[in-house]
Length: 214
Image 1 (cartoon, rainbow, N blue to C red):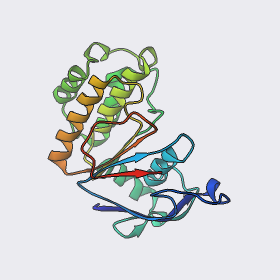
Image 2: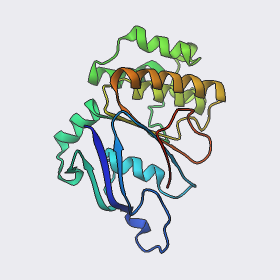
Image 3: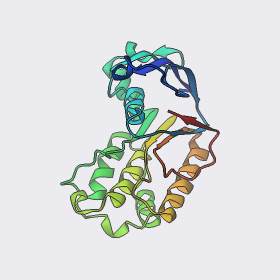
Image 4: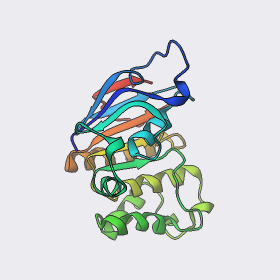
């Protein structure tokens, strides 16, 4: 997949609102593979909804979302399964980790589906992000910032054309944010994937090709 295009897209819940000012909603917007984008937004303007629309998790929107010219509403379940394994990765704002499983088990679940990373590489990321000691600890006993780092590693355990990160550093200090940005930049250079980051203030420190206001 090389292009994700939004054509006059708008959450249905916003349909009755007048005077929406946005670089994305009710516009013609294209995200290109290999480029990085920052979407700045106020709370409640639909940034998490946007991620869910693109990922196919929700369909309560007007307009069109297209992958390489194909309307995603035409995709079947099998298409989405393959896209989520090989083309689209996402770090949800609410993380969606399994509290009763350990940090490693949460990452392993994803990696078992794709077979994309070896355990040594994953462990190295745990060490670099300062959570090596949390490897065998249940997610439910970890802080939200620690969980964010686990979810970030899990998001990298697949090949991708695009990766969406919804407020990925909201609970991280600047040092960990820089570490995450470095790892992401290195992986983008290897795979050539596009990066879309959302933020309501604090954001991942990357060299963005475009900054948009939602």
